Length: 80
Image (tube, rainbow, N blue to C red; front, top):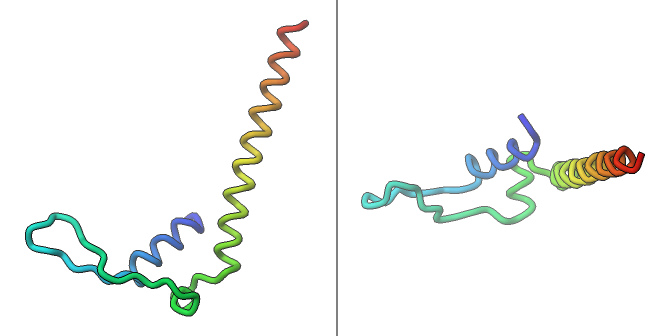
């Protein structure tokens, strides 16, 4: 499982308490955790958040670099 999905699943599963209202078909979140201590108790550390953010940033930069390289190669082929 990807780290970001693991973090989201942990937050949704352990950190929110929800109640289902009888006239609604979805769940309404009534309380969320937002302190660092509460996140640490369910296994989400600042290092995990930094790792997920870094991985996402790196994937965007790599995708841009590949697209740029392909664009340059296509332009060079068209000029020849």
